Structure formats: structure tokens, C-alpha cells
Length: 204
Image (cartoon, one colour):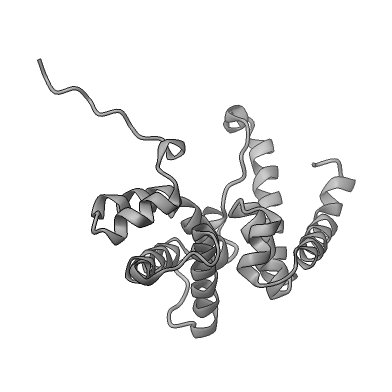
């Protein structure tokens, strides 16, 4: 008999952050791998939406977890681990935009760089609908990069792409929950305004 295939571990089945951190502090390298598995995709999506470059998003994601690995031995839970992790991610994204140490591999208008929105599987059989979806994503992406203030963009990305709750976004950005809601309201209003021509033409 061959070896039984190992069952893939779902993120929901992973230990709580506190337990993983405790094990990491005790020298359990496997625990750090599990922590990365739990958060890597979300960190990557936040970095991708911020940089519009797969390569730079990968670099930022790698740097995030290098810093986390180095900091965990002395980390104390003043806030939740996820809040701290997203703060590290957000700060590295800000550093990316400030430094401009390299040209973006993909342009802001590159449709492949945009984080795809969920859509029905059968859309591929409707080219016109696919084109509309791409135009909507392009317009949203353009507004995010050009029309939103830095705080509005950060709040929007963390909330809609990162999947954080308003309270978590507030902790990451160091502002009140009401301020986050205001930033989200203004960001969504600007996006709706950009999409208005498509809506008036009945395309969305």
C-alpha cells in the first residue's frame, strides 16, 4: 500500500495566532510556515493593489514576513497580530511609493495587474460582458490611483481588497472608526461618479 495522501489543511483549521506565535517563540519553524499560509495571500493582494506590480507585490510580501519573523521574538500583543501585520504591510507600501527605487514592471492601466473581481464562471462565453467587466475594473483602478487621497486609498484597499473590518482599518491607520467610514464613503462616492457614464448607458 502506498502512503496515504496528506489532507490539505484549510486556513480555517489553522491554530489561533496567539498559539502560533507562542510556538514560534519556542523555536517551532513549522508554526511560522502556518502563520505565513494564513496571511500571505491577503498581504500579497494588499501590496498588489497598492503597487500594481506583481514583482513588487511579491517583494513587499517577502519583506513583510522577514520583518515579522525577526520581530516576533520580542513582539507583545498590544493589538491583534493581524492589525500589526497589516500595519507592517501598509508602511512598506508607503515606503514603496516614496522611494520609487525601480520602475513598475506593469503600468497602472495594465488589466492583468488589477485585482480581479469575483464574477460568474460563464462570463468567458460572453466577450461583451467580459469587456464591460474589464472596463469597470479599469475605471475603478484609475480612480483609486488618481482621484483618492492617500488615506482614502489606504482605507479602501484595506477594507475592500484586504477584507479588514472598519475597526481593524482604524487600528492599522491610527484613526477613529468614524474617520475610516468617512474615507470609505468619499472613496465609494468618487468611484460611483466615475462609473456614472457606464450606468447611464445601461452598461452596468
